[in-house]
Length: 213
Image 1 (cartoon, rainbow, N blue to C red):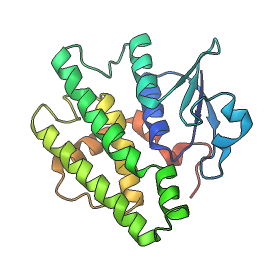
Image 2: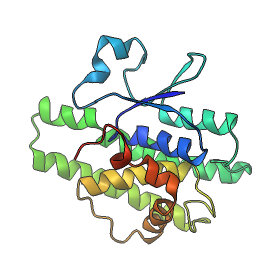
Image 3: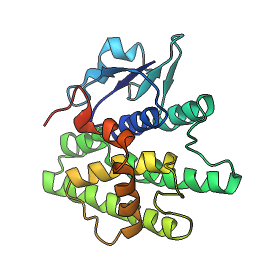
């Protein structure tokens, strides 16, 4: 398999975590978003949406969108499972994951921040305030959801799930932008439990071959 991704992309980070948790080998293919490599014809010919991550299978099939990729990996390599077998528990894990992937991330990804600055002429301080507001609002909702179910030591019980694959990259990004993370005890406990595992350490941005300071 080949994973086209960018070291700072939280969506790419999610997939790297899933691959590491499942012990799956892959070729790392960097696509530098900040330099616009995802908009170049060579990559556009591979990725219809022009985004990362993109997972190319051995037979040439290409899969896009991190959540779809992770669920594909979970269905084709079911151990360790990233989604619970119980339908209610599975729905809860998906809801937690989507709180990050659908509520927080879309408002704060790189192309949105570039549009705020480049087109709407928002000052950097205002852009960062925007970022922190939506991160904090989303993580507070995440914390409330954790409080309603089994959330120890991970987001849903005793093993990492799809929710943890989404949470960890979001916390990394929140720290990059100095977003406040106080008052989120369950969320941060789940993050720390994840980061104690080798799979999460191997997948983090600083461990990527295209990592930059």
